[in-house]
Amino acid sequence: MKNSVLALFCVAALTACKKNESTVTDTSTDSVDMVYPMDSAMTDTTMVSGTTQMNEQDRTFANDAAKGGMMEVMVGNLAAGKATNAKVKSLAEMMVRDHSKANDELKSWATGAAFTLPSAVDDNQKKEHDDLQARSGAEFDRAYADMMVRHHTETIEKFKQQASGGSDSSLKAFAEKTLPTLEHHLMEAQATRDAVK
Image 1: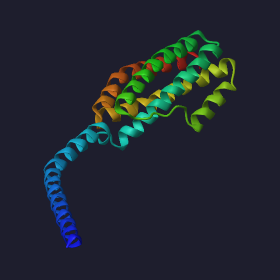
Image 2: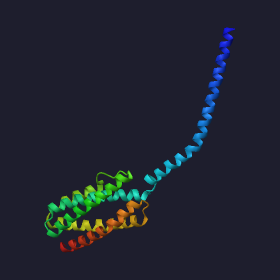
Image 3: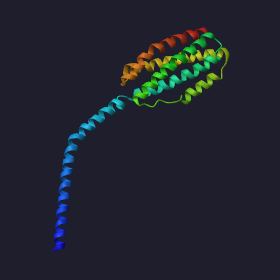
Image 4: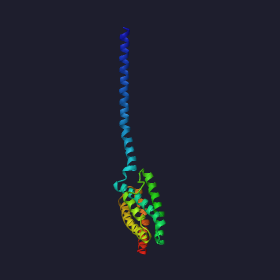
C-alpha cells in the first residue's frame, strides 16, 4: 500500500511537472512569437544601416581611394626629398599635405562604418614607386610630374563615379568634398609637367 501511494504520488508529480512545463513552453512560445519578429526586424534594420548600405562600388572605391592616397603620400615624400626642380618639390609637398588629410578623413569614415581599409599599397603601386625611386635628376622630375597627371586623371574619374553612383551617403559626401582638391592637383601637375618637359 505504501509503495502504491508513493508510485501514485510520483506519477501525479511528474504529470504536474509535465503540465507546467508545457504551459511554460506554450506561454514562452507565444511570447517569443510575438516578440521575436520585432527584435529580428530591429536587428536587421541595424545591420542594414551598418553594412548593406554599401554596395560593391562603395567597397571598391574605398579600397582604391585608400591605396591611392597612400601611394600619393609615399611618392610625394620621395619627390619632396629627391626632386631637383622647385616646382616639382612644391607639387610633392602639396600632395603629401592634401592626401594625408584626405587619408585621415577616409580612415575616420571607415571607423564609423566598421569597414577595414587596406593598410598598404598593392604590388603594382609598389613597383611604380620603386621604378620612380630608381630615377634621378631631371628624369625623376619628369617621371613624377607625369605620374601625378596620370594618377589624378584616373582618380578624378573614380571620385566622380562615387559621387554620382555610390550608395553610402557618407562615402559619397567624401568623394564630392575631395573632388575640387583633386582637380586642383591635376591642374598643378599639368603645369609642373609642362615646366619640366
